[in-house]
Figure 1 (tube, rainbow, N blue to C red):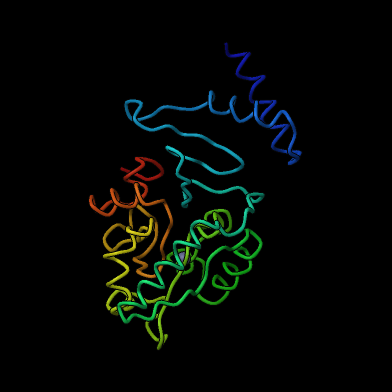
Figure 2 (figure 1 turned 135 degrees about the horizontal axis):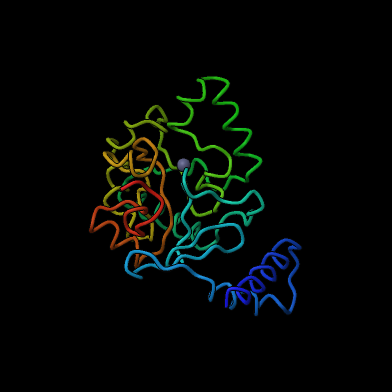
Length: 225
Ligand SMILES: [Zn+2]
């Protein structure tokens, strides 16, 4: 059995590494589904696929669970549509929510991170910026928003704006979660970021919001308990 799994792994790695779509891809996906781990009394299913970790089919990226340099799918279309819907509905409530940033490739994250390290030093930069390969923005499922005037943008104060408050209360209805909540810094590895929203889909967002959990806690993965 061990030998058999080794063969499956080798086949998966070869197909992934060449990056071409082939007839074998379907089989390879099926095989990688067989090769899953079970943790926490077999509650969650963990899969490593195309350079990302999926737990119960939700992508998780953080400082402990990196994303591969080659994962470069761009912005997720469904997530962006839902973001636009959320911004539009905000407008109906008299709010001015503005898109600030979304998908960032590994190369762009490298450039950004390095510029922060140069400016503030590594220790400080690590608190608010992700080292290359650990940014959720690379998944295409995360967005930063702001408002006008922009003086609270990318600051804790954004959480106190009307826009920030409405988003914290309503983002789940569009399938988003406030990814880095206040008081959960040790779990997420990031300071409170009231401007950063991650798309997980409506079903999971509703549960995460209702239970006041981080993605790490919800998936029971990728953090120190
Ligand atoms: Zn962000």
